[in-house]
View (cartoon, helix red, strand yellow):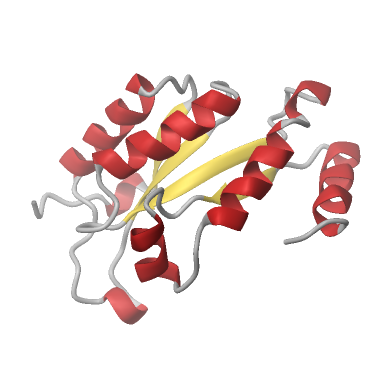
Length: 144
């Protein structure tokens, strides 16, 4: 997304009390490209730009982030790097780690394991984030 639309979206969210959720797929540009077909640079730049709005309205959270824990792609190292980036902007930004369920192009992968999700949560917290939680817990498996 480019300006002026990013600013317009921020203004609308600020006025309405809504939040802006970013799906930060991967830190490593190669992994991001493999999962999405494009670079992650603009996404990270936009996230950074919107993080400057947080002091205007800390609650309810103006900006939140999530990452889908795709087995074989998004591991603790990826989550730690993403979380470090977020924490460097504001350690109070809520961060959700989402369980993966195999479908569409990635049908050959298992669901995210409970152990994988817990290790990623711990990595995000070690990176400095205060508000980390695991979403889609009903999808977590014991496959690996």
